[in-house]
Length: 227
Image 1: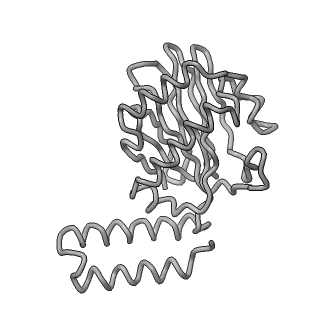
Image 2 (image 1 turned 30 degrees about the horizontal axis):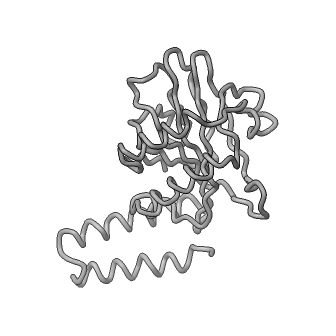
């Protein structure tokens, strides 16, 4: 499932993040790439674990916790601390699949990358190129979102970022280990949850069908989830 989630960050939050990133230390993006990805990755990123990265990562994690759509789709168990990258003219990231396991620097925590996330921090008019191209079961999709919007997609997907030809593309990227490992089960749960929410909005939380559907949802969570 590929899902675009609007306004994870509010405009004022995007502005704050961009201001803090302007004064951050940027390093070669290959620093966090795997052995194969390093060969096709050309960008820069804020040094992992730096004070700015930690501060802004916590801001994003707080925002994700306030996003019902993200929680419903990802059913997050662990979220890798967000990283920040920048693509300028001529920079790109060739086709690759993200590493299956990501260790969190300075800890014993490891995150299985069930879901990959890109949170856009620059508007599409600010740069040319830089589309995130994701290959999935239903074909290839190009993603280029408004600042503050995020795309969530399977970590198993082959994907790449096209060359930027004007301006700069700035974004946050990170991974989620879901309580529900299986993508098909997770998608079914998301569809059911959205149906429950829609029915509740029309008929009320106390409606008998809403109550029964809610029970089915939670019983399926009990069956599928690991915590």
